[in-house]
Amino acid sequence: MTKMSKTIVFFGSGPVAAASLEFLHKHFSIEAVVTKTKPAHHKGSAPVEEFAKEKNLPTHYANSMSELDNVVGTNQFSSPLGIIIDYGVIVSQQTIDYFPLGIVNSHFSLLPEWRGADPITFSLLSGQKKTGVSLMIIEPDLDTGKLIAQRSLAIRPADTIQTLTDSLIQLSNQLLLEFIPPYLSSDLKPRNQSHPDRATYSRKLTKADGIIDWQKPAEQIEREIRAFLGWPASRTQLANKDVIITSVRVLTDLGESGKAVVKDKNLVIFCGKNALIIDSLKPAGKKEMSGAAFVVGHKDLLI
Image (tube, rainbow, N blue to C red; front, side):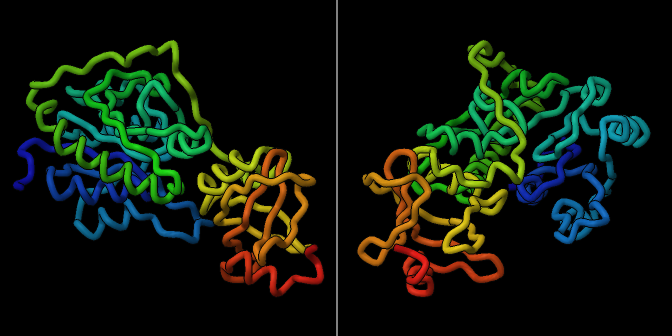
């Protein structure tokens, strides 16, 4: 497919943004990329910046609303539309109004469900059966804008934050390719979000969210482990060692909350309701291993 004749300005910083930018670059003309500067202490990559430089895309930096206003106000972009994904900077009405068609955000939930910073994690934590992607014309308020398109996606029982994010990126790419061209051509009219009074809100996670509370039901902890995989990671102590729990199964069993035992060579931890079989974990400073392997090395400390 040839690239669209009209150009866009892309705003984004994180890994989801980088994957989206790579896709958009194949199908649209990117006039410029606006991203955050990489913090001096940050040891990881800056994927959006790296991709933009690799493709020789004009790149600008803005870490705050005022910096973004300055970038947009001084660079005289000619694009009628901005697309913002995984950026993390609040956008002012001034910047939105600069673009004749506004700025479209690909938000990874079925708005007005899970407005806010981390909709993917909270869709997993809630135990809901489906989520989706919403293409929205942004407003200064939190995820309240009109919708260009919305499509649902089933959440699989074994989905983690990583697998669900990958699936949502693919769905987002499909919607961008399908609906941005008619929006650019004024053949599509945005619609209001349905039932805004039923909106739910996500929040940014903290490191403390990863500390496992064994008083919670096993089903809830199992969802947390899938949702927190990578960061903040689900952490506890076993056999006097700090460990990250990476994969579990719910077991219908009763016992003292937080107590770890060995059953049929499996590592089992009792919860507020039911228990969890620990399929895999990562002891501090070591590689990920199976629960059974951990049991072999710590039989003297486990019942």
